Amino acid sequence: VQLQASGGGLVQAGGSLRLSCTASGFNFHSYAIGWFRQAPGKEREVVSCINNSDGSKWYGLPAEGRFTISRDPAKNTVYLQMNNLRPEDTAVYYCAADLYWGQCVRDYGMRYWGQGTQVTVSS
Image (cartoon, rainbow, N blue to C red; front, side, top):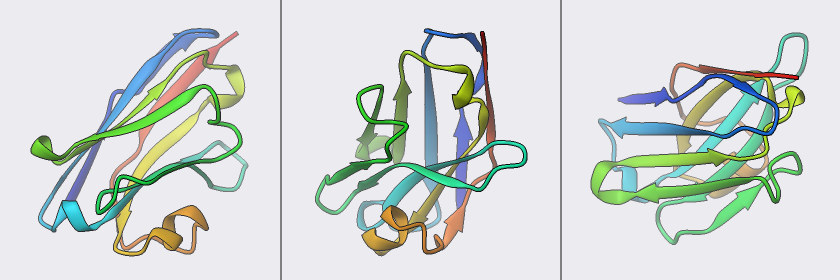
């Protein structure tokens, strides 16, 4: 099982980044995929979730109106388009997968985790 996150980088405030999470080794189409982030000294927080079984999407408060989650089932990939980035969005972003939607939305603990990708937003 592998979740490969990529697309992080350094961007100025107001800029955009698109993160990608490519999955392998499990039935991607049956899983919920989530993006989480953790900044130094802060708790992990759920950014956004997508349910590959029915396409449902959910956004945490920091992401609403600025981030968009999407998927490409043919590539086993989930994207997080992040626009109008702010310095407070600086964090390591992780993608994770679980069979149960609630595990993602409530951050109860996801079954599979990928490595993180660093997002740094300068002011």
